[in-house]
Length: 139
Image 1 (spheres, rainbow, N blue to C red):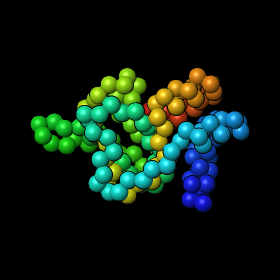
Image 2: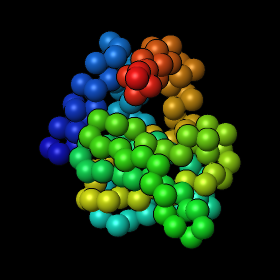
Image 3: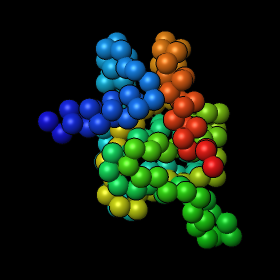
C-alpha cells in the first residue's frame, strides 16, 4: 500500500509538468525504485560515480563538498525535489560532491541508464526535464 501511495505522489509530480500516458506511467513504475535512508547515512561518496538521481518523497538530503577538511554545504533538497551530483551523473565521472541524509528520508531513485532510455523513447520526458529544471533556475 505504501508503494502505491508513493507512486501516485510521483506521478502527480510529473503531471504538474507533462501529461503521462499509460505507457510512460508503466515504464516509470518499472524503472523508479523506492529507497529510504536513516538520518546520517551517506547516500553518495565523492569517490563514487553518481549513477542514480533521487526524488525525495519525505525528508531532506544535503549535498556538500570538503574544503580544507571542512564540510561546505552546497544545497539541501526536500520533498518533491530531485538530487544527484550533476556533473558526475551526466558525465559518469567522479566529482567533489557528497550527499547525506540529514533526517530520515524516503525517496525514489532512477538509474542514469534508465533515464536515458526514457529520454530516448518518450520525448515528453525531455520536456519534463526542461520544465522542472526551469522552476528551479527561475530567479
